[in-house]
Image (cartoon, rainbow, N blue to C red; front, top):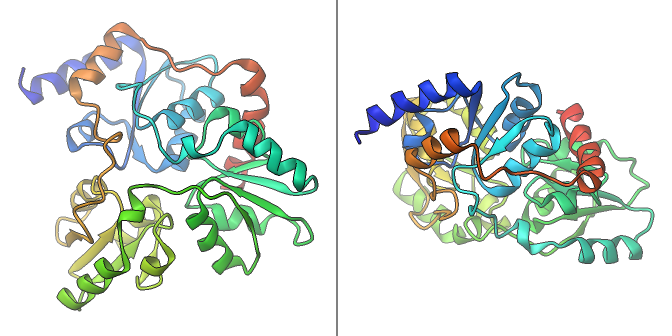
Length: 303
């Protein structure tokens, strides 16, 4: 079946099911064609919480669909590929976090949204790469802060807030492939270009960039920039969105190695299948959802 025919069929199924399709910026280009909303995890979390649709198709990785299920337990949440996981989210477990909390009983636990529902349930507030600094700044300075699971996002927050965080030693395997040498090479090759890195990158890479931006912030900067070329240091899927937003600007990757295989799993046939079958459903047990939703709601309130 031709891609255009699949798109048409999916649009019809969305109407029949009263469904919306939420698509993360890193998803394959063909998936973007059927998106009702595209964005980073914070933007998509807000859409999931606010929608009147009965069915949410979340095209991203598993923790994102879980977050939608946490916020909208009365809705049917499905994923085109339920096996699309996040290695960073798997680097922190509830038992380990509980043990760390026991060592720092007065600490506030700030958990990156790239985490499982069970870890969110042990957290005081969630954050994304877009609002992590704002979240940490909202915590009284006399309180310790445990930050999980991304140590490099935590280091970025430390630089911007001047606070020392208790960092969980997790990381994004995709973003750590982007090295300082990649940024230096891009600077030499494209001296007129802006260079953007994601906060999950290694500090030695981000310190050489012009801007350290979440994917949502990259879209915003994309609309504002006056340069003709931008070097983008994040997952390669982001280039599709940026090129679509500003076809007059040349966007080039800092490295071709920054590919998340999990983000690239779904295709349009998967979207059609879950809209047809409405399964497998992503659900969160209430004993986990109830404490997790409080942490996610605090994140949304802070914006």
